[in-house]
Image 1 (cartoon, rainbow, N blue to C red):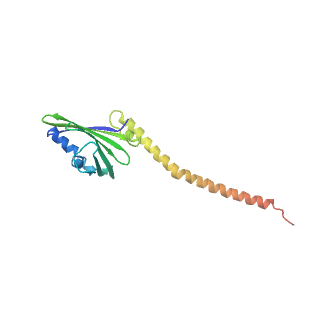
Image 2 (cartoon, one colour):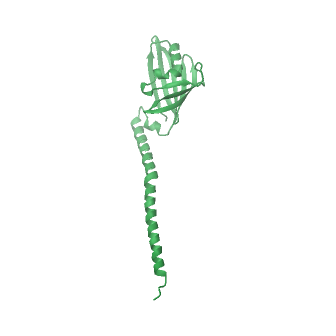
Image 3 (tube, rainbow, N blue to C red):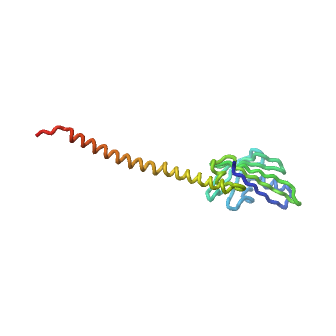
Length: 185
């Protein structure tokens, strides 16, 4: 069960022209989400090709995010696919282009192929998403609480018990020494 989303749009332009525009990954910032502030640059100059890599800088969830985009399929003018890999995950993007009412119908399938195991639960959409979201949120909350206890609460209790135990042990040793020594009268 991975994160998956499908987007569709109809463009009033021929499929070959739309394909060429989308396949130029360096132009992603022009058609991607405005909140992403995406800028992609090719590692090597040249036309888009399978295996071509792009360095992408943008904003993800309000934070700067760097990723590497690699074109994995290029079948002009029908299909384009690329993987976007950042430090936490890999998202596979697959575009299909088909003629539609004098223009082009574009479908974009986005699937997380690698990422933290709880992402699909927290980010679930569609039928049953409410239940999966609840489970994901509880899972993440539990990990945060468990981490807090492991890093702060347990060591604090240990230090308290160790300090108390050490003080009692020293006091008992000094009492035995004082009682056990012969006293001359």
